[in-house]
Image (tube, rainbow, N blue to C red; front, side, top):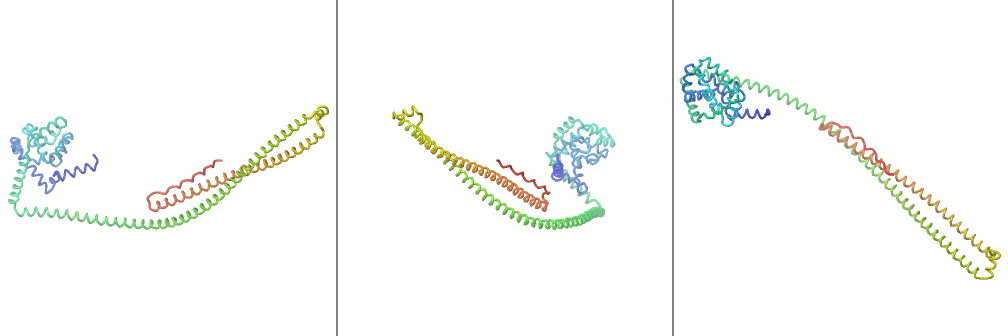
Length: 419
C-alpha cells in the first residue's frame, strides 16, 4: 500500500474508530475499557476472574497493549491481519471479542499459574501459540462466536462513570484541586511551549518569505530587463524581416519580368521557326511542281518532234537537233539558275534556322540559370526566415525561463533545378 493511503487509513482508525480517545485525558477511556473487560470476565469467565482477583492481577497489567496497539505489539502478523479486518468491519468492540477468546482458550493454563507465571504467560507463551495460521484462524472463529452486547458495554461504561464520580467526590478537595492545578499548569506549560514554537516558526517563515520575495523581485527585475531587450530585438527583427520581404518582392518582380521576357522571346523564336518551316515547305512544293511541269512540257515537245517525219529523220541521222538544243540548253540554264537561287535561299533559311535554334538553346540555358538563381534565393529567404523566427522564439523563451535556448536549425540545401 502506498504511504499516502496507509496514512489515510491510520487517520481513519484514530478518529472515526475512536482509537485516539484511548490516549486522551490521562487514558481515562482506556481505564473504562479495562473496567468493561473485567465485567465481561466476571459474567462469562467467573472462575478466571476470581483467580485474577486472588492474585491481584488487574486488566491493565496484561490488556493495555491489546487495546493501545490492536494486538500488533506481541502477536504474529497472520493473526493481526484478521483482527484488523474485523476491526474495520465491526468497530472497536471486536477487541473485547478477541480478548475473551484469548482468555477462554488459555483458561486452564492461567488457573494454574501464579502472579509472575500469569504475566510471563501473557508476555511470552500466549503470542507463540498463534504463530501458526490455523490456530489464528480458529481463534478468530471463536472470537466471532462470542456475544458481547453493545447495551451491556454501554451499561458498564455508565457504571464506570458513576464510580469515577463517586471516587472524585470522596477524594479530598485539596488533593483534587492540587491535581487539577498541576494538570492545568502542565497544559499551560505545554501551550506556552507550543506558542513559543509557533512564534519561532512564524518568524522563521516570515524571514524565509521575505528572502523569497526579495529573490522574486530581483528575478522579476532581471526578467523585465530581458523582456525589454527581447522587445527591442523583436522590433529590430521585424524591421529586418520587413526589409527582407521587400527585397524578396523586388527579386520576385525582377525574376517575373525576366521570365516574361524569356517567354516572349521563346514565343517569337517558335513563331519564326514555324514560319521558316512553312516557307521551306512551300518552296519544296513549288520546286516539285516546276520539275513536274518541265518534265510534262519536255514530253509534249518530244512527242510533237517525233510526230514530224522530217524532224524524226533529222533526229535519227544527226542525233540531237542543234537549234532546239540551244533552246533546251537555255531553258536548262534558266532552270539551273532558278534551282541555284532556290538552293541559296534554302541555305540562307537553314542558316537562319540554325541561328534561331542556337538562340533558343541560349534562351533555355538562361531560363534554367534564372530558375536556379530563383531556387537559391528562395532557399536563402526561407533560411533567413527560419533563423530569424528560431532566434526570436528562443530569445523569448529564454527571457521567460520556459525553455533553454536551442541551436538554430541549419538552412536547407538548395534544390537542383531540373535541366
